[in-house]
Length: 113
Length: 114
Image 1 (cartoon, each protein chain N blue to C red):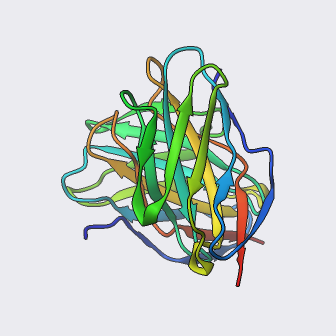
Image 2 (image 1 turned 135 degrees about the vertical axis):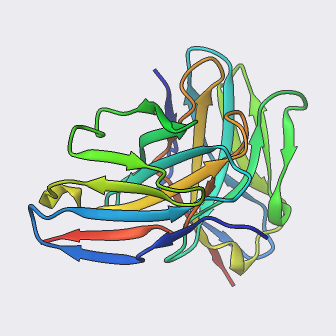
């Protein structure tokens, strides 16, 4: 069964550094998403992406964040200058259509020190 | 604005007994409703969804959920719990006429006691 994959599984970085989190969505899916889950808290939406552009973004997704689909398979989330409060589990998700269920990857645990 | 409430942080049930995990929602339009399950060190796995049609929807692993529009609820149920059902369960909602992102509840940890 196809699944969303994410790399790395765990990333440790120092405050102020740039990080790129990578995702490979399911191949026939057209809509892509990033969510995050701070430890012990609920899953929060960051951004959705369709047709090579952002379709929705939350208040969390400020100028420090960017997304890109550099080729036909990868979908990346970049944080330009990480802060301590960016420490969280970041989930990538994809869906065939906007009305369909979203399939989530296993997540990348980001630790900012 | 959309929101989801899962009033119970923890639900304990004996193996073989029926289980219910509660969820209520708030949206301005018609809701899309979802249940996801999260096992330790794993991502969120889709269980089932309600978009339209029959109020009782069936999903993976014997789970089902009932959409109740008047009570704005979408409780997850299973007739006979298994120890392997122990996990964190998330209810999520999307506004049919709104943005395409999901709003999640805070999660309910289900523990099935052997």
